[in-house]
Image (cartoon, rainbow, N blue to C red; front, side):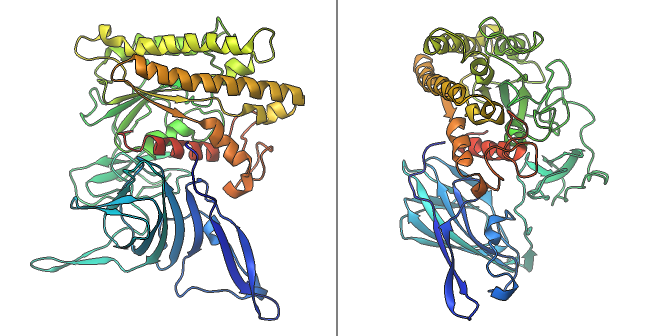
Amino acid sequence: MATIPFPHVRRIVTGHNAKGEATIVQDSSVHDPLPVVHGLFRSDEFPIHNGVESKGGWVDSAAVLGTLAAAGGVVSRVYDMAPGQVIPMHRTISMDVGVILKGTITLEVENGEQTLLKEGDTCIQRGTLHGWKNESTEWCRMLFILVGALPVEILLASALASVAFAQNPVSGVWQQCGGIGWTGATTCDTGATCTKLNDYYSQCIPSAAGPTTSDPGPTDPPTTSAPSGPVATPPPQANYWFSFGDSYTQTGFLPNETAPAVGNPLGNPPYPGYTAVGGTNWIDVDTIVYNKSLILTWNYAYGGATIDAKLVTPYEPTVLSLTDQVNQFLTGAASKPASAPWTSSNSLFSFWIGINDIGNSYYQSGDRDAFSDTLLDAYFALIQKIVSVSHLSMSAVGGRNFLFINVPPVDRSPLMLGQATSAQTLEKSVITGFNTKLASRAAAFKTANAGVQTWVFDSNAAFTTVLNDPQAYGFVDATSYGGTGDFWGNNLHPTSAVHEIIGKQIGQLLGNTVW
């Protein structure tokens, strides 16, 4: 993620001391789990209870994530929006007062009207369906105060019709609407029905009927039946995500078994799959939480993978390297079968690889910088094959959209913290060199291939931001693992909470695309 040009939001909170005198009770920066959202205040009741200091004083309720708006209460946040970022259409039971602090932003409402707001402009948002997009080349910072409101009443030509919007933001078509551990919206936008696939996942699927129903929950029968099996030919509005990598991405997908389909967008095994820490990972949430359309994800990632087993031997000979994974694609979905009739415009290819290549070789003799070039030569030779798959199908060209994720700071993992400081320093230097070269290779790859679009997500910077201030993101510390509130799920892999942060940031990076 690009560096945010704004300082942290400083919040000063007043209160009363034991003598009943007014005083400053807090003066600090504020964070939500994402660095682009800054929670200032939240109350789920109105009038607001300013509190009695002898009964506990100031409680920072804004630090607890909740619904976008508080029905019958007040929420205040500061939002930072990157150039090109889009917030899709949404609505809440609230009246929102917005102030543009820096930059410009475009407001779009349901009927297609758009208006540009500049620094110092204000907006009164009255329960309407609306979206935001930053069409400039500069970041935008906005302050919002959301006040709980009564449902909107719309006077129609012949009668007064009450339109009651959900207290929680609704999930859009093809997005998640329920399941074990799900804390988001449990109702779907008009024209879609919340359909239960398994205890962990319910999805908003288009329906011929009118308003949607809520998620049926982990034990209740589904509101409507999930598809009995994979759809032979996905609907024309489907978009495709072909994912490659190691244990940071794996879900246990087998390309010759159940294919991704409507109501089962990751195919096999059932969502969230077999991940490194047992819960959801970033590809899970980018497929069904932060998606902007129906995404069918073919996730070839395999735990322990290296780029090429001939260059860096994986921990077991049965591990499928990136070379193996790409070959699986080339001999299968690359031919655009009925279960995956992808095109160059509706398909995204993502790669998160290099952790094991460096972890299994950084300490070896020889020029590590030159070896990074050798690894990247093999890496991009595989990607070039995906660009050139047109020979497998006379009707369409190959891949054109590519997402590269660099190597995170695994030198700060509990596994490496048990090693000598010199080993940590050496691995960090090799990671830094590899990541720098990866960014350059991605840019050169785009230049050399007409029509290719690339994105590079800086996972190293994203991890570092959280590890440098873990409490600000709700984690206990930067070193513990395996416990409640820990950043690390085990001695090498981050928890699902970290994957949620990464997935959301990747969704923002892809904000102006169908993914």
